[in-house]
Length: 131
Image (cartoon, rainbow, N blue to C red; front, side, top):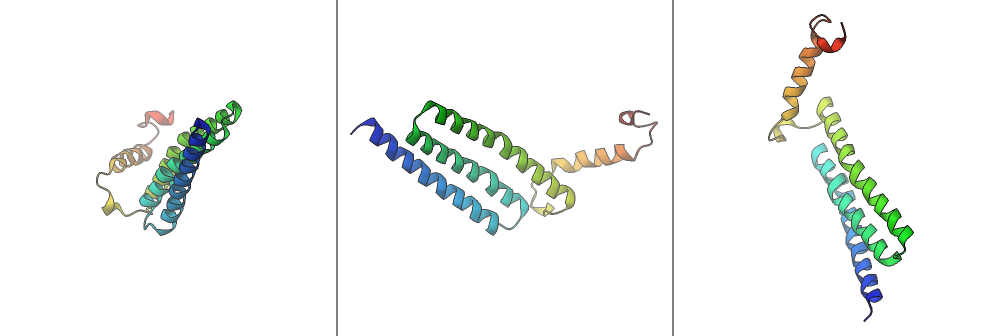
C-alpha cells in the first residue's frame, strides 16, 4: 500500500468528518434556542469542520500552490470567525436579545455602566470629549 492511497483515504475521511461537522453547525443555527448558543454553533464546529475539509482537500491535491491557497483560507477563517462571533454577541447584548439570567458572569454590564456614566458627563468633566 503506497502513501498516496493512504493520503487519499485520510483526505476522504477528513472531508467526510468536516462535512458532518458543518452540517451539524447548520442544524444548530436553526434549532438552538438563543443567540449565544447559536453563536457557538456558528463558530466552533463550523470552523473546525472547514479546517477538516481543507486538510482533506490538501491531502488529495498535494500541489504547493493548492496547499498555500488552502492554508490562507483556513487562516482567514480562524481570524474572522471569532471577531464575527464577538460582534454578534455584543450586538445581541446591547439590543437586549439575550436572556441575562443565562449569563454566569456578566463582565460587560459594569463596563457599559461606566461608559454610559462617562457619556452623560458634561464636556468640562469628560476628558475624552476634548472640551
